[in-house]
Image: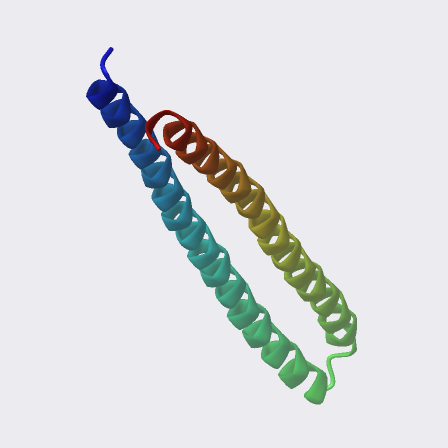
Length: 116
């Protein structure tokens, strides 16, 4: 393989890593949006449920108080779960991004070693 071919090969490999980095960013955004949409949906649903429970309590429904408290616990659990999944997602993508950046930098160093 001549020098020009080797340089083209390194350029190609670097471009592949950069494309993979772009795909990773896009995937992360999609996942963040999905988690955000699910979080919004559950917040809205639990908010409506809380309003119904409050109206029932105001009308004298004593069992609705227990339902309200149980629903509020579920709501808090869901909020924690979404926050945890979001943090896990951030950690995962940050780690993967670092791996790709290291791989790209390694290819740059190798290419430089041969062609500078």
